[in-house]
Each structure stands twice: as structure tokens, then as C-alpha cells.
Length: 425
Ligand code: SF4
Image 1: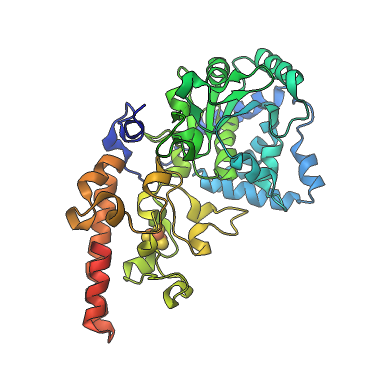
Image 2 (image 1 turned 45 degrees about the horizontal axis):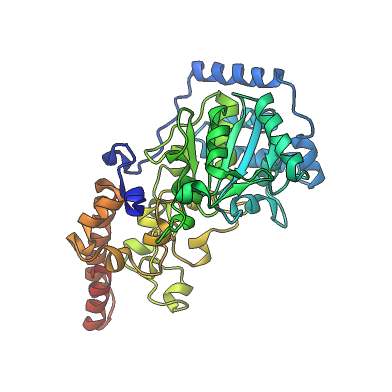
């Protein structure tokens, strides 16, 4: 398989439509209100699947009702719903245990599972994930061997057409799919994906490996690793990329389904627009420093200590769509840029080969182009609109910052020129 074709092809979608934009506003009218009320009544009427009691899980982890409602208010805002929906979102979270979930894993480090299982102090979102009615999950289930296989077969039969299939990890296609097998029966992972997705209500690709191939698909991709949407057809596929995916983005997507009966709108990369509709650069807390031309030039320098912009250290926030600045990780205690490292673009396709290095994109991958940003090559990777907008912004700010610094600071002119050369080269 031509790996580059895998990641730079048009995915059968309109490339011009790949520009991130603000998430479309949710139309909240009386009809939407009635739709949500009817959906919650439907969910309430469904028998809860045994053992998945959110209130009990929260109590055991000493998380108060007040904290749970605070979390619900946050996720309500993230879903672009008015605050009046907070109580309904909270109820939807409590009803999530009615949705049967089958979770399978292929080529992956299990990072997405670990992200919500191994927290020393689990967040509300992580605990809600634990309240999911997981019918099968190789990492956390007690059963093993043929017993586990029987559990999977029984769940797939009992909940046919109703279960959400979560796929973690990429899918190897090389050696006729033989690079990854599952369970005592050694079923090829690609066959397991095809079998289980055929009877699923929807498929969620959890993390960047499942969404876009991720690290297993990085060059030279010896196993022919590919993404879920290349293998699954006939059912909705929702990608929740990032490395690891943010548990709140996963929970919010299922919450939307529980609350409205519909999966959220997605962008051309099948990512929910409520979570991936804006560039990290547009909401970055360091953006004012980017606008002022104040850049970190080396790890630990004075600019780094002052939380200046990390663009020159390779930050890929101008090319990456995700809600990290607003939702963060670990109950929003931090995220990469807040912690002092640039964004590595982990929620974009081919991030490991083309984004995750500590140098600006233009100088290392695409060579000089318009404004020094390698525009033509970048267009091929990210879409004309996105790079044109980000590229013009970067170039304009670089020039403007040089002018500003010449006027406002008594810096030596050769230092300024060195700065401009560095950012534009
Ligand atoms: S380049 Fe990175 S650090 Fe700088 S403003 Fe943009 S996202 Fe933030």
C-alpha cells in the first residue's frame, strides 16, 4: 500500500471543505427541546444494564453531586448547548449505562484505555467512562481465552444493531491481515472489525491510530496499518483522534447520542465539530505572544519562562484542530502547550511523520514556498484554506513583529534580521 496516498488522498471528500471553522451553532428551539425530552424518556424506559450505576461509581470515588453538576455544565458548554440543558446533560450521563458498548483493540499502545483507567484521581469524565455498559474489553474484562470469545459472541448477538463498537488502534492490512489477531481463536483483527461493525449502531475510532493510522502507520508502515474508516462501511463512523484521545471528547460524543438520539455533526475527517471545529492556535493562551512576535527561541530561555509563543520550537497549533485549550486533560489541569511544549498535531492525520518534531513545519518538511511556508506542498497535506489562512497569519505576524520590535525595543538590528530569517525560512 502507498502510505502517502493513504494520508494525502482526498478521502473521497471535498478537500476544500477541510478548513476548520467555528463549530456550527446548535439550533436550540422547541422542536430540539422536545426531541431531547422524548429521547431521555426513551432511555429511562430502557432497562439499565446490570452493574453500570454512575451514582454508585461517583460515590465510591468520593466525587460529590455538586462536582458532577459542575462537570455537566462544562460539557454542556463544550457541546454548544445553552446552560439550561445542564440538568438534561447530567441525566444523559447517568443514562449512558443503557448503551451497550463493545471495545476492541488492534495495533495500539492501549493509551486511550489507560488514559481513563489509570488516573490516580479519576475525573468525572473518566468515571463516566467506567459507567459505560462495556460488554467486552480485552484489557479490563475478567474473562480470558475461549470464555472471553463466548462473551463477545453473546453480546454481539444479544445487542445486534444496538451496540456501539469502539475500536482502539489501527488495522494492519499487510500479510493478508495477519499482523494482528485477537483472542483464543486468533481471529484476524481486520475480520473482527468487519464482523462486529456489520451489526453495530455506530463505530467510534478511539484515538489517532484508529482514526488515521497513527504511529503504526508511520513510515515505513511495515504492516500496512490503516484507519477504521478504510475498513468499515455501512454504519456511521466517528473519529475521536488525539494521542491519547481526550476522555471528555469521547464522553461528550456518546452523551450527544444519548441526549438527542443522533450522532454529532462531523467534519470532513469524521471528527465531531463540537470538539474539533477550531484550530488550537485560535484559542491558545499564548496567542497574544504570537501576535506580538514574542517567541521562545530555546528550551528554558527567558521567553520560555514567560510563556511566550512556541511556534519557533515547532508548535503545530496553527495546523491542528482540537479543543485542548478549552477542555485540557486531567480535569483541565494542563495540556501540552500549557505545560511548556508545542502542540505536536496528534489529532491530525500522519502527525508522527509530518508534524511531531520540534521545528517549524515549513523549514523541515515542505521547503520554501509562499511566505516561506511551502504553501503548495502544505496545500497537498492540509487543505488550501487552512494553510493559506495560517500561513498568511504567520508571515504577517512575523513581519509585523519585526517592525514592532524595531520601534519599541532597543535590540540590535542583526538580531531582528536573524529572527525574521528564522521564522520565514
Ligand atoms: S504557535 Fe502554538 S504556542 Fe504559538 S500561539 Fe499558536 S498554538 Fe499557541
